[in-house]
Image (cartoon, rainbow, N blue to C red; front, side):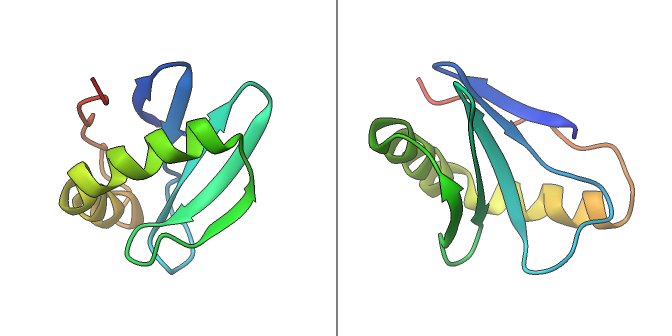
Length: 85
């Protein structure tokens, strides 16, 4: 899975040739979730504090994530997204 961002030990990835709806994956200390970009629906488990940071980052970068989604489904190189600071 190509890494598109990393912050506070959280790794954000997006797969090529994925299924809809548009989503990304987040990994943190052995936990993993899949989060739908438009709805914020979470599949998997993650500590609350980490999930809160992921949602804060998602709110800041929703358009960039959707742009990367389009690149991914067209099997093009993904663009790195700025981390949460």
